Length: 263
Length: 321
Ligand SMILES: Cc1cc2nc3c(=O)[nH]c(=O)nc-3n(C[C@H](O)[C@H](O)[C@H](O)COP(=O)(O)OP(=O)(O)OC[C@H]3O[C@@H](n4cnc5c(N)ncnc54)[C@H](O)[C@@H]3O)c2cc1C
Ligand SMILES: Cc1cc2nc3c(=O)[nH]c(=O)nc-3n(C[C@H](O)[C@H](O)[C@H](O)COP(=O)(O)OP(=O)(O)OC[C@H]3O[C@@H](n4cnc5c(N)ncnc54)[C@H](O)[C@@H]3O)c2cc1C
Image (cartoon, rainbow over all chains, first blue to last red; front, side, top):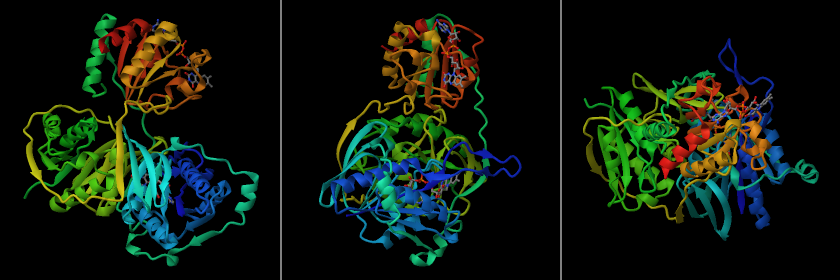
C-alpha cells in the first residue's frame, strides 16, 4: 500500500509581530519547522507501515526549496521518500490553489491508497486543504480522525470526534484522512534513522513535471486575497456587576449565560 | 430585481440546532440591512422540525430540504446537496459555523464551487457586495482581513460564540425544495454515540472553572469540580494552586502555563496578575468572583461579583441542580 502524508513547513514560533512601518508580518529570524500537527500524520502513517510491512510512506510538500528541511525531518522519523513541489508559479496560493497542486501531485505519484493530513497548519490555521484535496481526487474524506487502522485489505476504520458525537467510519480505499493531534505521540528521529534518511530519495517537482492548468495556480488561481494584517486589540469589555446575595447574583449569572447560549 | 441572498447553513447538534446557526442568523440580519435576503438552509429528516428553533431569530426565509439520510450523511454527501442548491439559487455569500462539522463540509463545498473560503472568522462586514472576513492566524496572535473579490459565492466559516443570538421579529417564510441525494458508498458511518465533553485538559476545554488562592479550600475545590461537571468543562488553576497535590502544571493557566480561550471561564478567588491574564484574557465570556472590588481580574471580566467565592459557587451549583 502507498501512503502519502502532506506536510507544511511553518515558522518555529507563533510570536510573530507586525512591522510598524510596512504593516507586513515580520518573519525575520524565524526558522521553519514541520507543522507540529503534521508530525501526528507522519506518525500515523508509520504506525500503519509498522502494521503492514509492504506499506510505503511518501511525504509531499508544496513550498519553497527550504521546505526540504521538514521533508528530511519526516524521513528521519522513518518515511521512505519525499516529494517537494517547488515553483515560482505556485507562490501566493490560497487553500484552493494549494489543494489543486497537491491533488495533481498525488495523481502523478500514482496508485496512492491513502492521503493523510494534519488537522491544520498552525500559521494560517484553516484546516481546509485536506477536504479540498479529497474533493479534487473524488475520494471519501474523514476529518479530525481520533484513531485510524487498517480493517481490511482495502479498507480503513477511523473514529471521529464531533462536538457532540463520536462516530466510527469505515472507508474503502483510496481515501483522504486528516488526523487530530490527540491520536498519537510522534516518534523522535533515531540516530540510525537520521543516518538512513540521507540515502532516501527527495524528488523536487517543478511546474513542468506536473499536469497543471495554469489558471488554477498560485496567486492567480486563488480566489481569496489578504487585504490587511494587524495585531489584535485586546477585547474591550464592559463589566456587568452581579449584585445582592450570592443566590441572587448566581441567578443573574444563569440568566446571562442562557442569553449567551452558554447553558 | 430580487435581492442577492446571504445564506446561513444550519447545523444539527444531536436533536437540536447547533447554537452557532442562530448566532449566524442574527449576525446575517444585521449585515443584510435592506441589501440582502437572509436565507437559512436546513437539511433535515422528513420527520424533523428543526426550523421551529430558527424562526424566532427572524431569517427572511428558511429553505428546507428533507431526506431521512441527512442526519447521518457524510461530509461529501452534505457538500453535494449544498452544491445543487447553490447552482439553483446562486447566493452571494454562504456562512458556516466553524465547528468540526462546518470546517469539514465548507472546504469540500468550496472545492466543488472553486471559490474562496475564509476560515474561523471573528468578524464579518460587507463593503458593498464584497464580504470582508476577519480571521485570526498564528495562534490568534495576528488578525487579517480577507476578501474574495471575483468569485461567487463568497464563503466564510465563523467561530462559535463569536456573535450573540438575539430573537427578532419578522416572519420567516418557510419553503421546501429538493435535491438529488447521491450516496457515497465508499464511506459509511457505522456507529455514532453522543458524547458530553471530550476535553481532557484545561487547554482543550471549552468551559473552564478557574480557581485561585481565594478559592483553594477543599470545600471550594469540591464545589468547583461539581460545577465544572455541570458545565461540561474542566478545572484550571492559578500558579499558587499547583503546589497542591491535586493540581499539576498541566492545570495551570497563564504565561508559564496554558494559554486558553474557552467560550466560558469562571474565575474564583483569582486576583488577576498580568501573568495570569495573558493566559486567559481572550476567552469569550469571562466571569469573576473576588472579595476585593479592586482586584484587576474585574478589568477583563464581562460579569463580576464582589463577595465570597465559595458562597457564590455553592449558590450557582444549587441553581443548576
Ligand atoms: C495570515 C493568513 C491567513 C490565511 N487565511 C486563509 C483563508 O482564510 N482561506 C484561504 O483559502 N487561504 C488562507 N491563507 C492561505 C493559506 O495559508 C495557504 O493556502 C496555505 O498554503 C495552506 O493553508 P493552511 O496553512 O491554512 O493549511 P491547512 O489547510 O490548515 O493545512 C491542513 C493540512 O494540509 C496540509 N498542507 C497545508 N499546506 C500544505 C503545503 N503547502 N504542502 C503540503 N501540505 C500542506 C498539511 O497536512 C496540513 O496539516 C492564509 C494565509 C495567511 C498568511
Ligand atoms: C515569571 C512569572 C510567571 C508567572 N506565571 C504565572 C502563570 O502562568 N499563572 C499564574 O496564575 N501565575 C503566574 N505567576 C504568578 C502571578 O504573578 C501571581 O502571583 C498569581 O497569578 C497569583 O495567583 P492568585 O490570583 O491565585 O493569588 P493571589 O494574587 O494571592 O490572589 C488571591 C485573590 O483571591 C481573593 N480572595 C481571597 N479570599 C477570597 C474569598 N473568600 N472569596 C473570593 N475571593 C477571595 C483576593 O482578594 C485575591 O484577589 C507568574 C509570576 C512570574 C513572576
